[in-house]
Length: 87
Image (cartoon, rainbow, N blue to C red; front, side, top):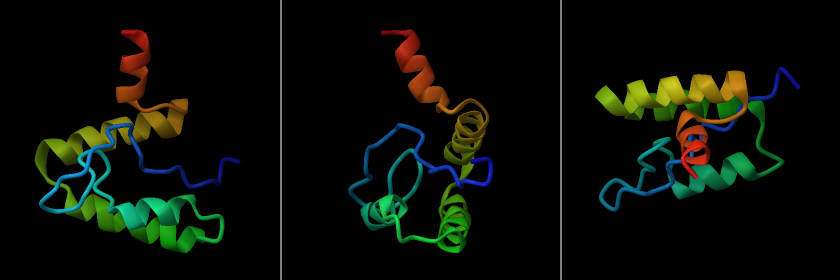
């Protein structure tokens, strides 16, 4: 299980109408579908992580890295954790 590549979704699922990228993870809708496809291999997922990180700049990149690292370590993104805490 420790070798599983964790989805880059950080629970901020809103698409920018201009770029078509998610505000949270910078993926397109097609990329999101590919992550859920059981036939998508780890090489594609690793490459896609590189691509989406390259799309991000400034605060978006900083926020993503912090939340994604938390998700890898704790199993939940910071955004989702904070939403559950405030519910």
